[in-house]
Every structure is written in C-alpha cells, then in structure tokens.
Image (cartoon, rainbow, N blue to C red; front, top):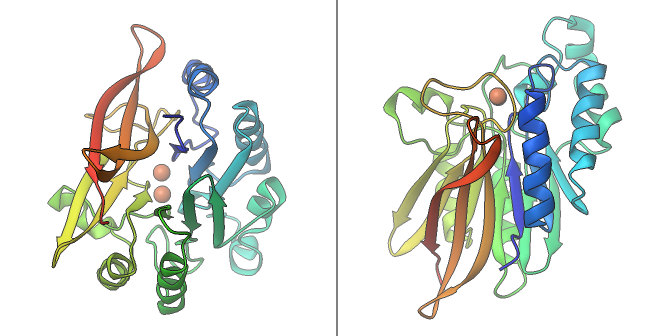
Length: 266
Ligand SMILES: [Fe+2]
Ligand SMILES: [Fe+2]
C-alpha cells in the first residue's frame, strides 16, 4: 500500500535539526506518500526567514500535494501591530493558503482546519461554524473514502496533564464528527505522538497525534517523529494503518517505531 499521507507536525523552523531534515527527505523519497500534511507550528517565531526555510523544506520532499495548517507559533507573538491586524500575512506569503481547506485525492477526503486564534496566546479553538461545516464535508465524502480531519491543536490526549491543551470545542466536535463519519482526526501542538480511540454507541473516531518532526524542541520521552498513514482492508474490515516513524540518532535515519491497524466504521 502506498502511503496516502505523511503527517509532519511542529517542525518549528528556526529550531530545526539539519541532520533530521535530511533523514526525513530520505524517508519521503523512499516511501513516496501521495500527500504531505503540515499540521502547524511550521516556524518558531513566525519570522519571514523561518517561513521561507519551512517552505523550501516542504518543497524539497518532492510530494505532489501539500495541505498546510497554521499553528500558534506561526502568528507573530511580539510584533503586536502584525499580530492584531495581519496575523496570517507572513504565513500566507510563504504557503499561499490560510484557514480551512478541503482535499479529495485517491480515496482520501482531508479537511484541514485552522484552530489558531489571534486573541489566544497558544490555545486553539474551533468555532460552531467550523464544526458544522466539517460535519457536512464528512457526510458528503465520496463513498469508501478515508475521512480525515486535521488541525494543529489536539482533539483528545492520552495524558491527564495534557488535557488543558485540547482545542476549545473538542467535546462537540467529537460527537458531531463521529456521527458524520469521521475516521481519523490528526493533530500536533504538544509534541507527543499518540493514538486514542473515541467510541460511542458503536461508532469509532480515532484521535492521532504527531510528535515534532525535525525541531530540537522535543519532550523528554518523545524524540523526533512523523506519521505515515495508509488505508486498506483487513479481514473484510476497513482499516487505517497509522505508522509512527522515529528518528534514531545512532542510525541517522527514521525507522518504523509503532504500527497501529485501526478498524474503521463501515
Ligand atoms: Fe509546537
Ligand atoms: Fe503549537
């Protein structure tokens, strides 16, 4: 199975490790995913040079389709006039798009959401309109498509100490999107990879988090990692295969560290 999607999160250009960037380029060349998802915090401080480096790196991976989402670090923090009046200008200049997007590609429907807010420091938020519009896009997905929602801030976390980082509106989003047929919701922000099952009344939604791809801003117990996602069937059941690839300094390469075959709703 060719990977549908490479999720690369929180690269924080300005704090990137060049050797990890090179190893990730080699992984992309070997695996050849159809689509690159950059799930926010592309830069450390939203500086033009950091955006340019992030853009150059994304392009250097040679993946034809890109879906890019902003993270809280991609809004200027100290440049107050810019933060207030044109917070997405630099992001937009580098990546061309801002805010929400809808992509259909080879049996994948990907809904990208902007969860950043200029008036919140680092917290994320989903509006009622975003939650409702996403539910409609999920319901209208082509039959059999893998239905994926992506945003920078986590919808669900595995650790109690991370609960405050969940996106505002997460409860309603989980209920509405699960009902509307979402398979996976991908997030970043906390630099902690995880997979969490959210099941209610026989329907399941999976919350998948990615670590930081190339930044040295890693957690004590989670190094640099990315997710590769494939779709298929196993014993007659639709599945999403979520692979976590970790950078191993000793071998100077990304290696498959965890494989989750997630059963999906019919
Ligand atoms: Fe981050
Ligand atoms: Fe973040």
